[in-house]
Image: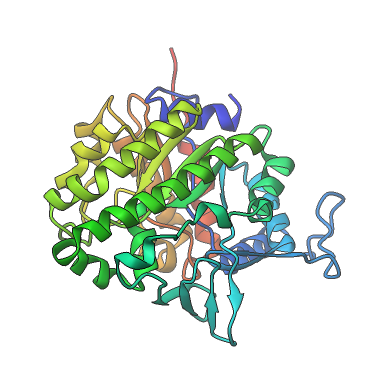
Length: 373
């Protein structure tokens, strides 16, 4: 079975030949470390010559991603035989100074030491600011340089996901912070609906473009909960978020794309709602607050579950042998009757040991095969 078929089969809640692999994000620093571990001779192979003079830069919502990084991403995918890769859309980030950047929608960020953006301010202060605010008109073909590069290089056999932010996350970014948007839930419901409508239309436009370039699936990121509970009440979710997620999911399915939802935290109280919306998969079943065996039993036959190898403690501080043992245990708990994709419990961030990421993938290849009589 080809890697792409393996992913689609699992998202169809069926049994592939082997448990497939997925990552929502492998940050640029981790890509460099993993690639260096896999090929330490400056990547000088026939297919992967990383010429520093050819380093076209694309700017993503996570900072800057170079063509060199994209080449290394593809190298890792092929070297480790990953079943899928996630691609990102640029939001036109430009530097204001060394540490402050701004995207083309007017959101201002401070960059962390790893290039991760922290929202400082947004363009929407009240409902009047939404009158002529149209995110879709600001989309550019060059925003899809990264996805197109990956699809053209390795997308024939491997599943390529496009990562988009859900309307809740995009809305609080436009407001300049989550706390502002949460206050709006009480003080300005009309503004909430307006922002959700604007950001939903933007996502529909991204999905529409993604179909044309050959994307296989959509990953919708945006945390809805902390470790203890939702960031808002279930009634607020049902009124302000659920209808817009439903519109996005229905549109993706109309375009024959699979679509999954990412949220860290304890989402038990809305798990049925996420399934009802129609998401094909739910990621990452965070081990600190969601028991994957209970989630598997609860969602069996209703949604694919994706996760949940701990990236807070195990992948940063454990040993490769400990990682392999946890992968084996997790497969035993979650892979029965199909509908399971293995990944970290969030992403491969700079704290993750590259050898542990490699061990995680190798363990899937060792322990993840289904036995057919």
